[in-house]
Image (spheres, rainbow, N blue to C red):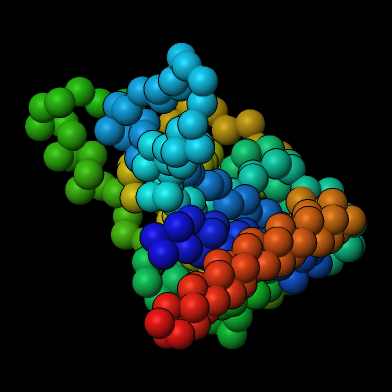
Length: 280
């Protein structure tokens, strides 16, 4: 029964939607978490092959109602998931190493697998005096480079760019003040500036875990003046609306159950057909 693949593909896609929403609910209290959405795509054989739907202009016979036009080969797939980067609520914590970003920017951090980006601002200072995230990833300082042409000057500028390890922010013991531009001050002296990165198209960022992002296109980084505001002593909360997500989860579960009942009906029809044939 080829028709079974239609509800089966729908069940697999719907299961992916349930898992995505469930992950949103599970991270409703995760700092700066951004919710995800699953996008579906339906493949119709009639459309792919350019078949025109032909309704007979006559008195209809029973066989006219069995023209499927390839519908039994239609299937539903997950076209992908996208992340909603809308701003989450900002909550004061009074911890000087808690940072909340207001705007589209991300903190640039250095982890075991290279440079990553995050909006999770639970920071601290390790034993080496390095400013790190709650995952131990080191915060990188800002580097401003002049605009250059396409000649030898490009090579000269590239040679002057410090490596990520050379850009790790370090602090001395003592209180620290961080202004809205991400500049760090100790004893009234500027000791560094956090690199806040904004992207032309955040949707092409690849999500890693629940709070990290990878940018594989250097052209996606905006070089103009950053508009993101840094709030010291505060954290950005998740942008997940728990009530809305729970409602979506219930709907998704019900839709999945409906599809599963359809699959069961096909299975019962197949078993009945096999049993009838076995009698002959």
